[in-house]
Length: 200
Ligand SMILES: [Zn+2]
Image 1: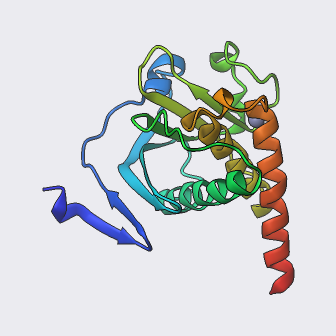
Image 2 (image 1 turned 120 degrees about the horizontal axis):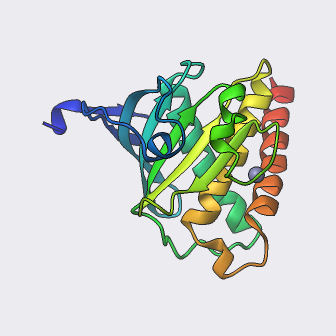
């Protein structure tokens, strides 16, 4: 059954699942909103090793396509491997490979509503990454949509960096915090996309 649904995209393999269910973050924080689960799958990243990411995608407004989100997660995790090697962050410990990565495409107003006040990172948020301690082996990222393509890309890069820091337990071997790591990677990513735009 899974084989029949196999789709090849570049070097990644996505196993689509027809099962639709509520995400853990959704059940915990916004059970009354109309959130649609559009895709569940597994992404393979082949860069200095093979890493799999199980993910589930949820939309409030369908501002980003599933394909765009999967491509950005794949691209950023691969770049984060390069970034970590260049900057001597130890990623030999793939300590949270079992986690399911819930990806939410929400409006800014929902992300800044009372539902999320108990989560860290303050007011006027555009994105969020959190582990879900109530649900073992689940983490979640929320992103919002903005006019600028570069803003959207940098926001996703930043939140995926939080995922990466947690996934490889970088805190075990480095004093760099998740926020510092994500800000540094975001800068690196912004330079990369600006350079590639200049080269065109
Ligand atoms: Zn952050």
